[in-house]
Length: 247
Image 1 (cartoon, rainbow, N blue to C red):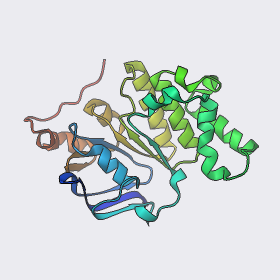
Image 2 (cartoon, rainbow, N blue to C red):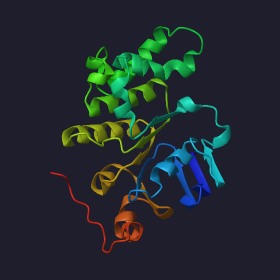
Image 3 (spheres, rainbow, N blue to C red):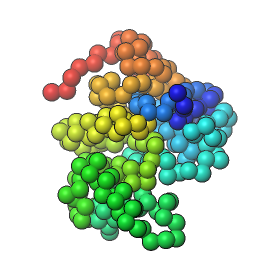
């Protein structure tokens, strides 16, 4: 199977502070990877390295087989940052207009045509917010905004979604619905890389987990993760993790 992301012996530091050290992992196309680790463990930095937003101090990153520094098909990657929903409060656009922005890399200097509008309609339907198309994005709930950003990535025809704690501030029911949406998109072949603190919800939805605290303590399927001591080593605690269902 082809790989969406290949990270090999990557190290990155902010000045004298090493954030990511000698990390190697590969993400196959169509897989669903969860990144977990304590606060300040380098998760967001690693995600940025994986999708080419940062360049490593040493080691290499490849995106869809190409060196990340030379990858010029940014529309294939849909990135939703941790603060995206906060910043969207001040965006003076409707949901439809925000999603249409995903077509800009394809449109170039021409005006969006019927095909672009149809892709926007399809994206809104796929994430179940077609009824919110004309609503100002600042009037949405946190969960609805996240769906809007996912729809924008779908309108761009992204192959990879990179999400940094996408359900922070989202209520439990909306979070469950959001993860069900991610499952559906992953089933349709979209590769997903997700930072999440909740081990329970991760192990319920992803097919592999990378546990990080500057160094990589585990990368493998959820069963091997739950049977490992990675969480204790990464968090500096003792005992094994117990997965349980949310009420």
